[in-house]
Amino acid sequence: MLDPTQIWLTVENEEDKKLAEDIKRRSLDVYPYKTIEIPYYRLKRYLVLDEIQIGKVEGKNYDVLAGELEIDGLTYKVNGFVPIVTLGADPFKRFLENLTKDIRHKHWVKVKIMYCCKDQAVWVEVEGHIGAIAPKRKDA
Image 1 (cartoon, rainbow, N blue to C red):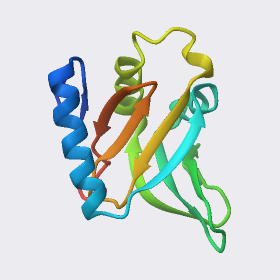
Image 2: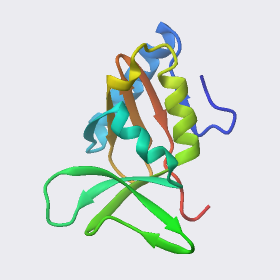
Image 3: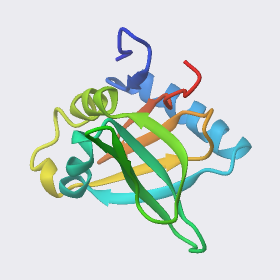
Image 4: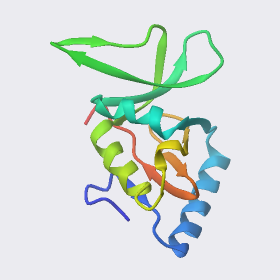
């Protein structure tokens, strides 16, 4: 299903799944995608933020999911966090709801997030369900 604003796409039938897998495979061959696996219940706490950021902690060799929180005009970030991809939390929340709508006990499932750079789509897999969401553009 393509969202009306064309920000995200979720696969709903076998034909779409084959097409999405082919596009994802070609994307993964061209760009250096990295993967983060996070339980759904941990991911849910990020959905209250304005932005969901994926990146690295400076000087460390692991990828993290973090957020930027604004309270009373002040912006708070994780110390040493270097964002690579930024997603809007509202579109991501709708995307994730659509991607997990037929999954029972989704609280315990693992969400696999694949990202590479700020201009490329972020791929998400949840128990065989697959979808892609466009990163937020700072210049728009």
